[in-house]
Image (cartoon, rainbow, N blue to C red; front, side):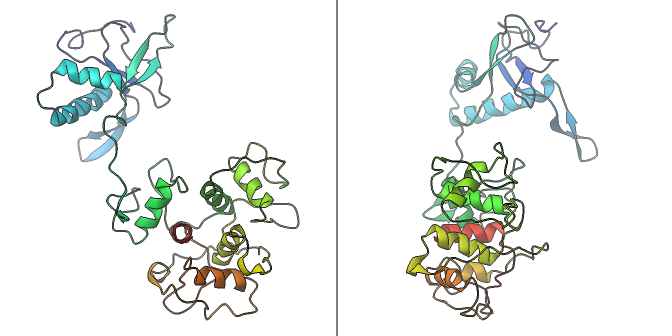
Length: 327
């Protein structure tokens, strides 16, 4: 029975823990006695150590209990003199309510939530990374500062697996999302004109805003091609237009990009000379010369150690973070 509690959870001196699913519902196998269950915690498909140095996904209230045991231990470390009752009460006060939809009464239980009790340390102190913002961006990563500032400002986001994928090439939809967030996500009025961007597209507002502001123009066939990679010259053009095309230069057209996005940039993009205003591979007649020269003059882009800009190369997420950070 969902309301049956057996030993040891039935003992008054025990913290009785029920389990929730990845959808934050009470698990079908979980006990749910309204007077005996103290807390819920994730207990379905939990990565668990197994003999042989491996891991498997397991489910059960025995998978949920360690979450609560660890939280109690952390609270006890903060306040060694606190009673168990006090520690449990603190966990319950900070918990998220979850209703048990398996029973007609739909009793609500407190589900363990640690964000308020154990807030993360700041990503940056005096402009320097103090901890890794993502699993694949260590605190000594050359772009950690730019990425961390982008995260704190709400401009950059990672994936649900905790990664940022810094060397992945930026897509056109992601570029518009970055710029849209940088501008504060203003309200978008009017229809989207791109035939490949539906009304429920996740980046619809960002892309529509970019087009309305003249930052992006799309292709003559009416498409935006949201998943197409962005070149370094196109990234400069986006930023240049967003800045109002200083000095009144003519806007550059967006070029079709090669299918091969290129490789990651060397450290020169991070540490090159900010005073460089021309590049060996960007002549004065280059279609994107005005945008790239502006980016160099303002210190947004620094090029490579060999004096090149490599305009058609795909812009990586870490380089785009640096561009946005220097803007």
